[in-house]
Image 1 (cartoon, rainbow, N blue to C red):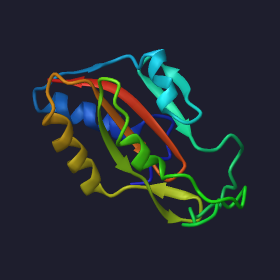
Image 2 (cartoon, rainbow, N blue to C red; image 1 turned 45 degrees about the horizontal axis):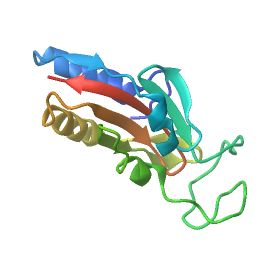
Image 3 (cartoon, rainbow, N blue to C red; image 1 turned 120 degrees about the horizontal axis):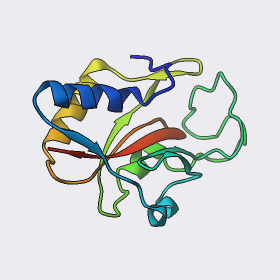
Image 4 (cartoon, helix red, strand yellow; image 1 turned 60 degrees about the horizontal axis):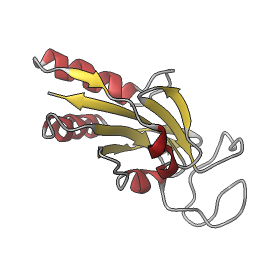
Length: 146
């Protein structure tokens, strides 16, 4: 799945899947005090952030090399998908790793969405931080599922 749309596709899919199964999903605001846990956070809504290791415009054909950033030529920081798994602040992180399928093209497998659903519904009444991230960039939503 290549989510080339201006929404957090994994979260939109998750919300529809939960509601279709008879559940309820509610956005949960990500408090200002939590922004310190995210690299270069950009608030999109009270419950959604775009986050990035980069404070510059990345090359469109980046293939996420293991050792060095293609732009800075410096060692890469910890992959964002790993970092987001440790964010707390009262939220339980549920992160989908976005993978490079081609030069500058990221996405995930359908099985990743099924796993996201199972993890989300296994934490009812707990604020979730649902995210999609590659090594450098991501988007996260605060959600409550029941």
